[in-house]
Image (cartoon, rainbow, N blue to C red; front, side):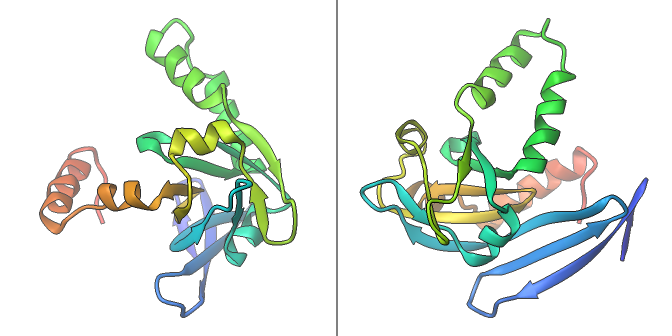
Length: 178
């Protein structure tokens, strides 16, 4: 059990022992929450369908939201998490030009998605084009979301140790330490 400011939550690890894959879920006072973790390699078929790892499917539920992400990937959120993000957008000042641009970027092409079968999901052409998802993809769990990357773009965005040391120092300057 972990205390986090105003709320407590219990973290339950689910080790799948298949290399890099690891899923985690948690329970808060308000109910269950989802934490996505792990890296999975898959392919998009010519119809734009993607087989999503079983652990992610379970955590995403029957409906989820896909939107453009940062760095040229797609962000995938549970419906509940997307609702929280919408609330954040409702609360930002629209007098800021950057806030308006940021809102448009995330909200103009987000769409709710349902499973087309037990294992696969269809991603619309405009989202696949944005993220350059043509064949080989990497799905990465990043706590509250799943990121879907073109495999080549993902490899370009992974970091070497020296670069990660610099990033860790910058994160410490922002008040985040591990």
